[in-house]
Length: 206
Image (cartoon, helix red, strand yellow):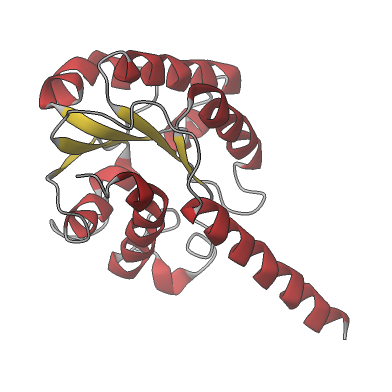
């Protein structure tokens, strides 16, 4: 009986996450005149562990009626990303930028508050160019939970779209991963669907 209740609670949790991701909120720069969706992140965005075209930005590009640019870099942290933000993001005529960092920061012992501050700075810089910003949170359950809480707060404070718990149900499922951390093609499809669910309300005008 307790096991049934546990699974019911877990199921309800994931349903609520999905519904919150699809809900339309007050977002800054919805009148963006940019032309491209830029996926700016680390190996999860890059598509480590799968063939070209199986990464989540490539899958997302088939769901939207706009060009999608994969600006992911394997091994990138929120610190090293700043060295390429102008060339890989700001110079690409962004309509919307999906920011996905913290995994490598965590693995490389970058202080959590530094990561949070770096992501906030990225958002401010991108928004100053008139683009919509979105944070792709790669937490799952208790894994990187503290980052999820802080990044969610930043999203609310800056008027950014928030894609919560993108790796939920993936990182704990060997059939969805190519190694201990990275999704396989099926896992990336789920991430793309979650991202699309969160950003689709803001793409209608395009």
